[in-house]
Amino acid sequence: MAEIERIRGVLLDIDGVLYAGGRAIGGGKETVAWLASAGIPFRCVSNTTSRSRRSIAARLRTMGYDIDASWIFNPPLAAIRRLQGKRTFLLAQGDVGDDFLAAGVPLVEEGAEMVVIGDAGNSFTYRAMNLAFRAVLEGAGIVALEKDRYWMGADGLMLSAGPFVAALEYATGSEAAVVGKPSPEFFRLALEDMGVRPSEALMVGDDLASDIGGAQAAGMKTALVRTGKFRQDAFEASPIRPDLLLPSIADLPGALSKRYI
Ligand SMILES: [Mg+2]
Image (cartoon, rainbow, N blue to C red; front, side, top):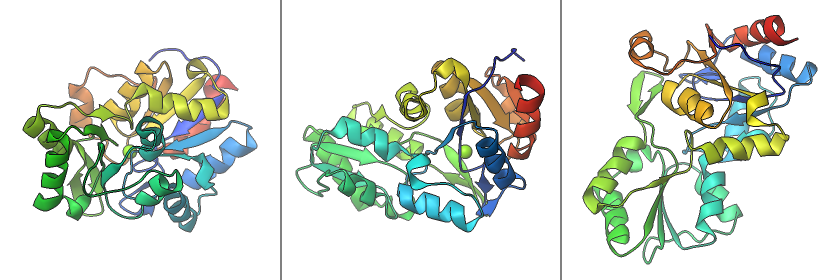
């Protein structure tokens, strides 16, 4: 494990780190409170594309986390920067459209200049995918809110947006711009908000490729937790190695205190 210098800011993944399968991870809220008391700023970076920032924060609060909506960085925030007000066909679910509407992005079904695709869950119908397919053939660009393969649901692994983004790319021959994790621009957005340089920041996540690989490419230090979608066999098969490997987020204060404070 690489030696790490003092950490001045932390990015926390949400699903699989703060909660898993709809339940808070034990010790999570104590860790969040510890970061605040230790004066270490943090932001939550989630590839969740089925809820708006406000909904994500509200859900975390029901689990006991004291987290403000403005501390949540989700892929819609990064996508909005790219869309520049273009007419957008949004393939997503829940109230995630609120984040786009709040930024003045016109959401349309026909005549779209951009197709934005997130985890639409059961809204990934043939009709919706075909609308997206036709829009791209007529010249629309594709923005993928995330391109993860799967995530851990309450009753097992669930397909994420990635397989559907790949289907759209395969059908159209166009490549999607991925704006969520592991895009370096996404990590930078959250770090800029804290005024912390990548080399002084730690990313905590449960996804080796998106969280750990992505943050390393952005120049950050990393901690992988063995909760959420962590799988020992996938870890052993991967060349990606985090700076820290922790049983869960509950172990973060101990690891940081031992090494940096
Ligand atoms: Mg996760």
